[in-house]
Length: 243
Image 1 (cartoon, rainbow, N blue to C red):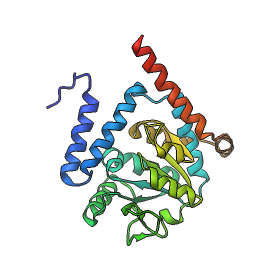
Image 2 (cartoon, helix red, strand yellow):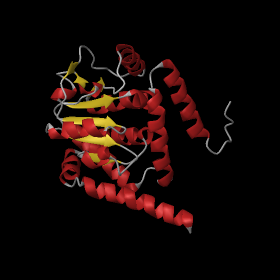
Image 3 (cartoon, one colour):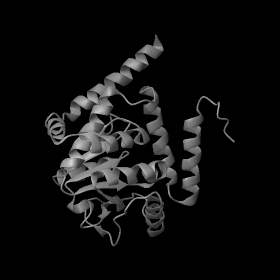
Image 4 (cartoon, helix red, strand yellow):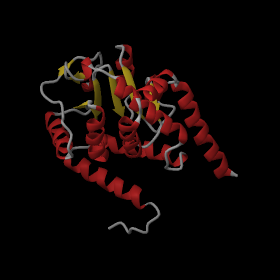
C-alpha cells in the first residue's frame, strides 16, 4: 500500500500501475526504463505544464483539426497511462487509433487493442504490413492507417520512426518530455509535457478552437522555438534549485 500522504504518491501509483501492466505484457520491461527517463525530465519542468507546452498542445489540436487523415499511434506505455484520454481525443478530432510497437508480438497487439477498446476507443486494427523503411517491428502498420496518414500523433519518444514519417511527407506531433531527443528535434511539432497532462489539453482545444485560430496556430508553428523554450524552462528551474 502506498500512503496517500506520501509526497510522491501520484508518481508511485503510476509506477506501480506500469509495473503491473508490464507483468501482464501490455508494457514491455524496457518501457519502464523509458518512463523513468521521462519522469526525470518532468522533475525539471516542476511536474507541470508550461505556458510553452500549452501553446504547443493548442497547435497540435489545430494540426489534427486541419488534417484529412489523422492517426494517433499508440504504444504500450501510452495505452497503459492514458487509454481513456486517447479515446476522448479520438472523439474530439476524428483520428484513427492504431497500435504500433517496437517489441511487437500478436499477443501484445491484441492486449493493447483490447485495453483501448475497453476505454472507449475505436481501434483501427487488422492485418499490418511492413510498410515503413525501418529494420525493426515499428515498420509494421496498416496501409489505410498510419501509412496513409497526413498527420500522426506519436505520444512518447520514438526517434527513428518519427524521422521516417517526416521524410514521407507527414506532419508528426510528438509528446516527449526530453527536448534533446531525436524525436523532439525531428518532429514537426513537439510537446514537451507529460502525456497524461498533454492529451486532455489537446482534446479541449480540438473542441474549442475556431477555424481562424487553427489557421493562425499552424501558420505560427516554430518547433525549434518550442524546444528552446522548454530547455530554457528546465535550465531556469535547475539554476534556481542550485541557488
